[in-house]
Image 1 (tube, rainbow, N blue to C red):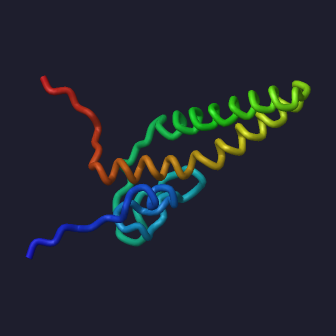
Image 2 (cartoon, rainbow, N blue to C red):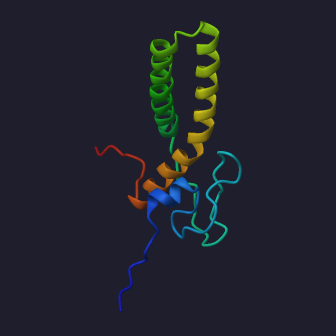
Length: 123
């Protein structure tokens, strides 16, 4: 009988920072450092490379939220510039730290699910 290995869904698995192969092991050994392999199933994580993908999405989402909040605050309350700086700085740093790890895990899980590899030129 031919059995196809079933892998967990990449979105919840990646957002939780779990192994994309088994869904049980941890993907990260630190805040953003990827483990060499899964401690449960042994899946090799060395080929996962999200490069600048998480940073792009974090900057895009954070920039949209910070700019929207600044515009809303200005039109609704007209606060002094130091209030804008305090709110924007807090939002930017907080959202960046909150989003970068789940997005890095998500991109690694999507790479695994789609069997993504390094692009090669053919001569």
